[in-house]
Image (cartoon, rainbow, N blue to C red; front, top):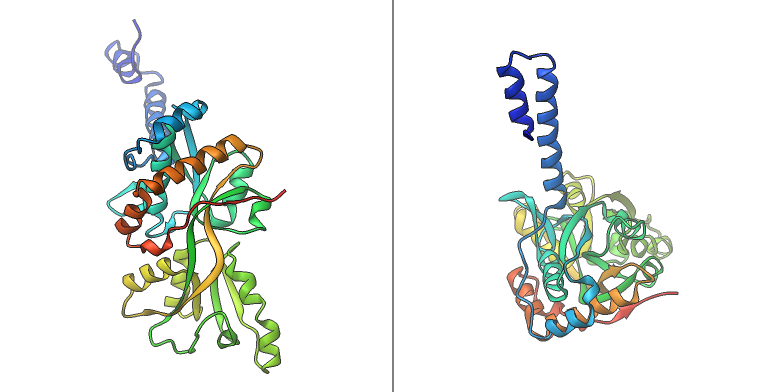
Length: 312
């Protein structure tokens, strides 16, 4: 008769065979730890919005994805988009999480999550450790060399500063000369700030310096600690930071960048790319994305009709 590990240990004890008992308990503890690690690493979120009627036809058109479990690489440090649920750290919450779940519901697949640094999002996708990236990533021509993008949101950046804006920063311009910006490694704002060097020199001012971090939370902490003067990123991320620290931070201004937020999928998988785009179109037509923007207080004007950004 087969015994569970616990039953086996008790059987050995009851028969007087205590040799190796400690080893069996260690095995039991190890098994529990491994199971817990497995459950935490997936961190599957609750189901997204019900699939629109049009998704039935899409599941028939793309049957190869139905019933699958796909991995979404995320940088879970952007409240409102993707972050750990403060009430249940085993879960992820946010607009991007809900949008990804809705796409999965539409095409018939489930989503699990792989947390990585922002700079590792696309390399994780390229290496095959993830199937998709839905993590508030700007779809640029340069990034399209590493992955294909389906856009879904416009980009508005906010300029986060200490309360009172002591350095009088008004945007990505010469008001940043001589200041220190905290930014995420790999963010598009980094070269924009670096490109101010010429204008600052012409004005007889020192160029801005940049501190690089792995996530938004560390960038925000750099301002709170006085190590940096500003942090420029998605305006909703900036607004969330001000909401969290209203006595210490403020938004100096908002700027429009010529980019879109996109879903990254592996190059060389045109059917998957088409499936995700078709699902996104159906979700937008059904009003689901608008509802999610409202749910997460991100502003309906962020919505953008899907378009492809690819590079050969």
